[in-house]
Image (tube, rainbow, N blue to C red):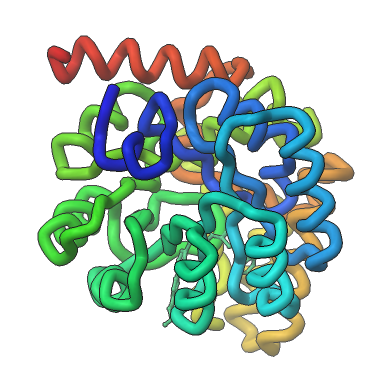
Length: 307
Ligand code: TUI
């Protein structure tokens, strides 16, 4: 299937993997790229040296293009912005902030820059700054989120900019893909579905929490700090929300979230960890390979869109 995004990125299918902190390592990124989508290494809160190693390992196991997501709240974001240039990364996506100050250097290096946005305002600003496309990410998503739903955000971003738009948030199958195309998107980005990919290194306890989640099983913490984060509800989200109501400091709260993600993803502690996942977790019922996931979505979408 050809769209402006498959052309821009030189990929077979318009499916991009979310740059999930701790989850999106080189194994997952390479598997998605090998399956014809665009795999992404998620820098999350990791040091620049770690991100460089991840990029080098991905290059060893795939010749296909892959990207790096830079979480802009990472204290080493400046260094990581340089590492992607030095390592010849083809595509950069960004999250949790405005990447404006890096844009000129990335464009100069020939990198395709795709900021993740949660509002029309930032999408327009990114287009003016030279972005090649944007990911319009709805509040259904897991992790750090904005306020607007995918259904409302995507068509408004599509109307506001002339660059291609990738829809994200609440998409996990061919129906979601087809709906995104109907809203004017040229591709989708999926996170939650790829968390439970066979090639995902996420602890099995975490995968099982996603697989057994129902539609209403996520909670949003951090609304009071200005950094809302969606996770599957557990002891920690309940304690966090209680602390938040009692007026805990920003530092106390933020420490709980990022440290908690590692605890859940790596250690499999799904009681005390943060199980970031989107509202669509309820639709994700089994572990599949990245190839199976992409093939199934494209085949469903073909029928629905009568291609
Ligand atoms: O970034 C994401 N999702 C993430 S980042 C992350 S790691 C983290 N953990 C704890 C606390 C905070 C982060 C987990 N999930 N998605 C892209 C995204 N970006 N969603 C929302 C935004 C966003 C929000 C505000 C982008 C820009 C923005 O403001 C722009 C400005 O002008 O500062």
